[in-house]
Length: 413
Image 1 (tube, rainbow, N blue to C red):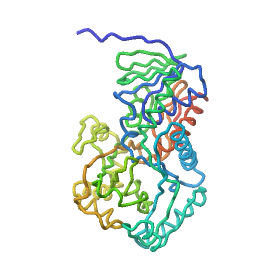
Image 2 (cartoon, helix red, strand yellow; image 1 turned 135 degrees about the vertical axis):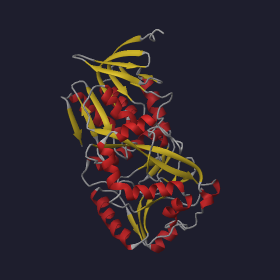
Image 3 (cartoon, rainbow, N blue to C red; image 1 turned 180 degrees about the vertical axis):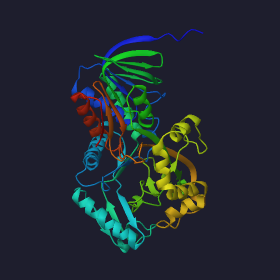
Image 4 (cartoon, one colour; image 1 turned 30 degrees about the horizontal axis):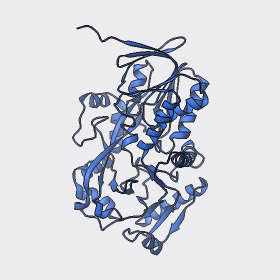
């Protein structure tokens, strides 16, 4: 059988790999910075925002969790404002419904005080609600006290991506779907890319490949010191009769010893309310069904020493999450501590998103930006939560870094 015929479709100034919100925001920033540049965006799926962007909670975060003065705090604040402004210009529905962080015991009250201080230092408006004020604001929620963050909002990020893509195409920028990248070769003056049957060259390449970011970096011949480990965030949609159960987003006070935020009640912009997510190890990077399994993905994880170090450090919380995953009653108890009205029968329509968690060889979970770069390439190997909220300023930051040019390096910011 003869090899498939390649279509050599010319040369570009920039090639962006990845059609999630970070890739689209990066392409947008490039087009704004260099309006005459020839830019192509490659996405391996048949649609944009097919993975992390299209399966997230839809929250526009205010940034209350992040270390004061940190890059994440700065980008989240700027991103929330930019996201809301973009939605207003494009006529995309969003709602600034606010968030309540609910303390249900004295330990959580102490943690809430630390969050108050972070919010104050990050210049985020908040209000502390006592028990009676909490009951007045949310009659179906129980707690000792709560922290209300009014700037938190909700939106459908897939609609934002569609609007970004339309703007890019109006500028003459190519978006190619169903183009999985299988070869990246950096040469003296350009980077050659093979994607499906398309072969192209670009002066520079930036990869925002999310769940496949480590693999694209390796395809490009870069020496990386991490792997992506997928974590499934499983959640349930409440029945329509429960869609008015809360007015705000309801979050627990996070445990600083755990990497994830815990099960919460999330209002969606389409009127639904979800319960979740938990955080369980995924056995397939892109497997959204509960029994999803990929031998290749699992073998890749098992061969990486950092994976076993993560398991060794977090096996107790991992067992608890798996127990909750297989028992709706146990899952519900995580939420009933502040919303006792819910029943197991309310946990309808299970679904899941998958988080691309970068893990270093020593087992460190990367919670910041991780860049791997060479003279003509920049690979975004970790864009931490809340990447969707922060996507617009993240795209500008990536372009700043890309245009500076680089020598081979690994950077965690």
